[in-house]
Image (cartoon, rainbow, N blue to C red; front, side, top):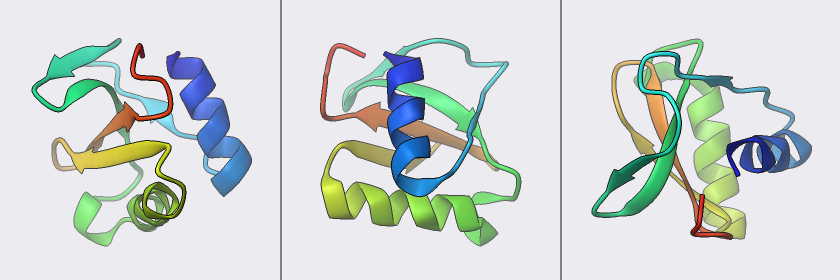
Length: 82
């Protein structure tokens, strides 16, 4: 499911996201299942983060949450089985 979500993001936004190599695979939280990606820039100044937030708000297929300095958690709302 991670690869499908990454392909969905790439198709709609053109972003090729790098998976986090420290917190790998699907993680669980009270919000649901998610996986982590690493951004090129810190979240507060990241163009990628802005694009992902806009995509999430417009289509409702994913949800993004900051999860570190350059780490972003991506929740797949389209298919909650991640």
